[in-house]
Amino acid sequence: MTGFTYYAKAQSTFKPPLIANENAFLGDVISSDKDNAEKPISCGFYRLEKGTPLVYTYTYDEMKIILEGQFEISDETGQKVTASPGDVFYFPKGVTITFTTPDYGLAFFTGQRAEGQV
Image 1 (cartoon, rainbow, N blue to C red):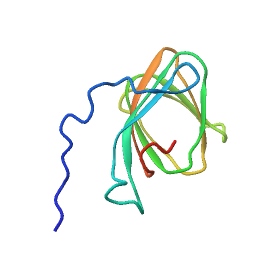
Image 2 (cartoon, rainbow, N blue to C red):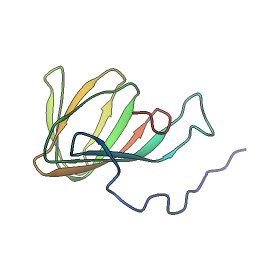
Image 3 (tube, rainbow, N blue to C red):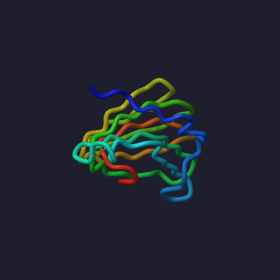
Image 4 (tube, rainbow, N blue to C red):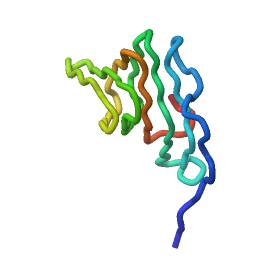
């Protein structure tokens, strides 16, 4: 029988490292890849500030919940949503998403990928 794993105080800031442009920040908090290399799961925070849109093609499945602010999220099918706190998204592997924001947005994500894979 296997029990749960506890990571005390694993996260202390909600402004993760800059990953793209001048305004897109993303940071993994924790990953299961050390315990499950075959099907790892990573989670963390994504923050976007007003400025350059981020266009991203997913190479893994991801779920994202909007925590603060607002995102404008669109895909190549023409679907477009103005996302607010409490909204949840599923981004399947292979989809290309464009993220913008009128001010800033903060989201928590869980993706089926190894730590640091973006």
